[in-house]
Image (cartoon, rainbow, N blue to C red; front, side):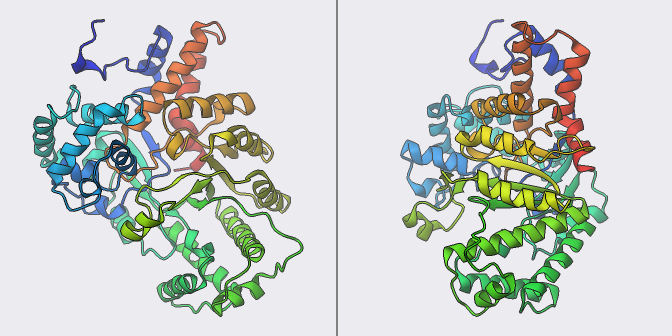
Length: 471
């Protein structure tokens, strides 16, 4: 096949053998998408937002692109500053050729191809025509948010939502019977963000106002959280999610009375580190019991060290692209929490995600400690997350799970994205998966049994998630 620059993203992209190609095109390519973890703004879906420019849909809030532009030496004025949308796009176009071997190079051209039919390469020479072409397409209803989801065969989208959210956008979409299920995910991070007692109390006051119930005791807090969990479930929620550096290890030598510790917090006192960890552990355990009662799945995203650049935190605020991989101790906290809940027979379905690749085997084997019948893969070692959701990271996650557990029970990929143009990441994952399996077959390490292999591929890409979550 003659390769020209215009067909860099071609039908057999990332598929390096006949078996890989037959698996992808025959079994994976046309499956629907269950995106069980994303950060898409539900308001943009409910209002069927039209994005005015490619910059607005592609660069706003995309920390991956921002970090690449900063690494290239682009001034912040063109990243998060007040430069025009066109000037920001030009600076991104200038950056793209320098992202070779970064997943951004693949994602950029996949997204241009899949959403806009553009097969050429993005650079400063092609920037103006690509920008004009894409902006014209964005003005068509086919490129409003709802049709962007429908066009990619998205069946379910799970957003990420604070317990205080009124879920009005989810309820609106449910009432209008939108064909894509847009479901909330319960993300209670602020409920155990207790390092700053003053900010914590402000949040509790907000939560109390939303529920109309005073929160003056730990029991009150649990009652309010149960009420919010009930509300989320009525809106279709089936998952909870937790973003933590690590699951804390309880300190038996320190106070572990949650009522006592909560009153200290409510009085504005800052707890010592051991007391904070004890409180978090107990609250996570109580939340886990509630999830189990509901039949939900709980997710733990562990290992990010956030807001590392103090200067830019003051200038731009949190979640602006200054987070990275942390090196926290993980095993003991996971084991302590899961063992406690398992002993009570109240350990919910769980997905573990690590950000530090050094923890791959740790997380995969920890998941295996708490599986139990009759459910397949009750505790999941989750897909490559954040800095690891690229080709090398996905392959390592797939290989680790294959070696330490059962790949056949894996619930597959998610976007973890704020962008409506991110769904080719599922295609990217499916191509990588099919290529991995296909290469094994071509080396004689797996049987060339299309029915056996095709079933494996389809289960990982779609059916396992559908059955696991019960959407």
